[in-house]
Each structure stands twice: as structure tokens, then as C-alpha cells.
Length: 315
Image 1: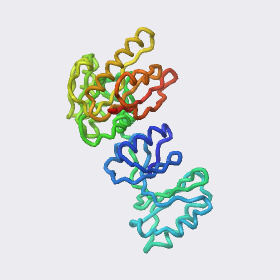
Image 2: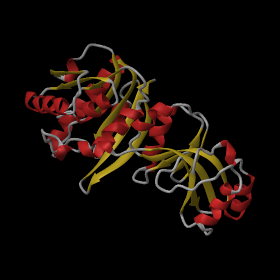
Image 3: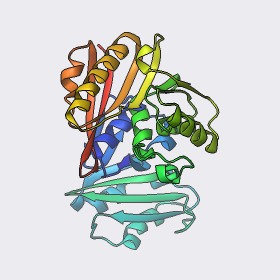
Image 4: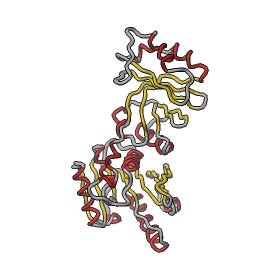
């Protein structure tokens, strides 16, 4: 059971599904339930708060019956506590009595709890899970203004990480053909993937190298190059396209975007996740290729820009 961030539930849900490849799942607001054994991937998630072993769900008036009927011995480990969220009427200490009366040598531990049971009320339904993993927010320490080489248009590390996850990559190389100061490369490198970054601007490439070295990213290649001259197969592409708002520049960028999509059409092996400015009609451009639009998401950045995150695959 995944407790998703409400910052962007749609993106959070897609990120989990891309990594788990789950065909069947249940969704209720920011709760996502599915079968998966991909526990090693939990730490990669950017828009998930915590992961639980799903125990049961019930209507609010059936909660005590469900607590009484559950086999608490099957999930109990050394000690326990119960926490409730969303306005559940019963007190936590009263709910804990069902566990206390079901296991041998029960012990409540609030701070260093081995069996943390949490209940979430959504509308008139309650979900119960045993906490497995809290997703840390270490990526917040890698925000653009905290890096040694600042670049004002760099993606947030959370969004960069989510974009990488949307490819579903388990192994392979990550290419960023417009890498700028290296935000996407940093997150891919932190996940353990070999990364290849290109940029036509030598100045920002130097910033990328400084940032990558600062975070100890070693499996990376940087090259000053026009991305459109690439002639090799590209496993996974994750990039945030350059943008500008004046009319002339927008027309020039649309040509750049189309030429880039044609490059992907020819050389992409698996998936690409691309960030577009919201004022560009990317669907019109994609239709001029054989690429398949798999998903799209809107991410609000500030009052003058909403980013469109687009997942592309081979047709």
C-alpha cells in the first residue's frame, strides 16, 4: 500500500506503476494498493510518502469487526503501536487493545516501533497497513540553489527523480541530450545508473561537471555536442527541453523540438520522458513522428510556467 504525495497524485501514481509494472491495482485518492515484490525500488520514489504492507480495508462502521478478525500474530514483530489518520472516531489506545489481546507477550513501543500499524480514513472507508518504509527526502538537499554551481532553470531534484522513474528503468543507460547543469544526471547517478549528458553550451557543461563531482557521481559521460547529431541507440532518454517565450524563439524551439522527436523516433530503444513548456503544442509535434504518447502530466512550477511531462515510447 503506497501513501502518495498529494502534491501531484496522478504523477505519484504513475511513478509507482512504472517501477512495479503492476497490471491490477486499487486506487482511492492518495492510497494505491497493488501486488509487487520490487522492494529494492522503494527508496527511488519521489512522490510517495510511505509504503505499507496492506492488511485490510473496511467501511468505518466495520472497523472494530475487522480489527477483531485480523490475524495480528502473522505480522507482529517484537513490539507495536497504532496510529490513525483522517479523523477516525475511536481512540488509538482502544484500537491497540485488539492487537494486545491477540499476540503473546505484547509490548507497546512508540519511538522505536517494529510493528507500526497505521489506519487511514478516506471518505467512509478505512485502510490499514503495516509500515515498511518511509521515503526519505534526501533529494531536497540537492536543490539547485544548494549545489556548488547554480543554474536558475534547473529542475527540482524531486521532479527529475520522478521523470527517471517514469521510464521504468531497472538497468541501462540514461541520456540527457540537453543536460544543462546536470540536475537529471545527478539523480540518475544517485540511483546507480550510467548517465550520458550532452549540451551545446560549454559553460553549463562545466557547471554540470562541478555539480556531479560534488555529489560523487562517477559513472557519467559529458560531451559538448549538438544533440541532434546523435547517431546511436538510446536506451532511456530523460530531458527537460530548453524554452523561451518570445514569438520568434518559440518558432525556433518548435523546430528544435520536432527535430529532437524525429531523432527519438529513429534511435530510442525503450522510453523517453521529456519536459515541455505548457505553451507549446507538443501533441501536434508528436503526431508528425511514429512515437507513441504513453502519458502526460501537468506540473505547476510558478505563476508563469506549468511544465508538461510527457512519456514517449516506440509505436
